[in-house]
Image (cartoon, rainbow, N blue to C red; front, side):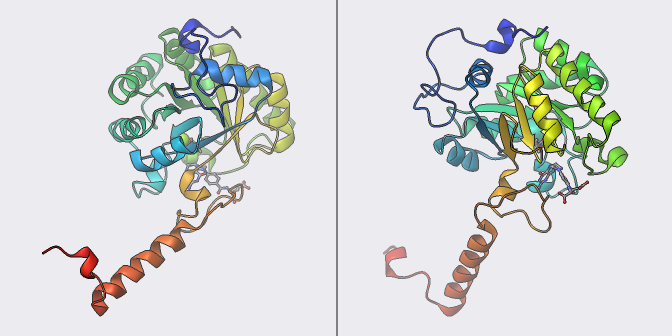
Length: 292
Ligand SMILES: Nc1nc(=O)c2c([nH]1)NC[C@@H]1CN(c3ccc(C(=O)N[C@@H](CCC(=O)O)C(=O)O)cc3)CN21
Ligand SMILES: CC(C)C(=O)C(=O)O
Ligand SMILES: [Mg+2]
């Protein structure tokens, strides 16, 4: 099954969300998985960022980011956990709803957290349905290739578009660690099988995390659905980064695939210190900030 089902492609209206391109288009309606499929046919690359709250999401929406992922990286980047493993479906539902409320154009993809789909297709459908009905996401993401294909099939059959995620799958950190995947002939063949399995199950896109650039390029050439790379080299159809990494807000070590486009940590701590000094020194508030 390599053709997109009606459920995945959403509206059949000819109007496009961005005029001609996913990024830089002027359209106002929400982007659908059908627009994503059309971008691959045009050979167009597109950006994806994570978001965990309405304000940040509204900034990225206004900047024209066409797809946002409410990642379970919220676990370590937003909620203060050590990893993504403890994140609950209740937490993902609350954060996803906020991101949907903060945006009007981006396609919002909600990450299914660890434990919310591993029991099988029925559990996956129950969990994904919460993200769709209670949070209003346009698609969900789950980890695993061949091992998750039955879950993907049922969700897609049920009208829920699915983004798959293969290579390094962080919810399995206790089993696999945070290590490059797909190195060596056997692992490369497994990654290719995983990529084909999620496409055949009906996924509309697939994240390739921490895989050798040459292998990611081969998967991208082989698949009809777009690949979204993170630490997967320059040849994937799309690129995703965790927003706090990209903007320099994550404390401590960040993965080597991160490019830092700003230093928000420095900006924010500078502002906090300036405020504190004003208060301690009595230079804030001034007359302009006072009422009489
Ligand atoms: N802040 C943040 N950024 C992310 O990209 C991210 C998260 N959190 N949490 C969820 C997953 C976990 N991810 C990770 C976590 C660790 C590495 C890491 O330690 N990578 C090593 C390379 C390891 C190797 O070479 O085998 C690195 O230095 O990049 C990579 C991706 C990606 N995701
Ligand atoms: C790193 C991306 C792909 C992700 O799954 C997340 O942010 O949770
Ligand atoms: Mg995730």
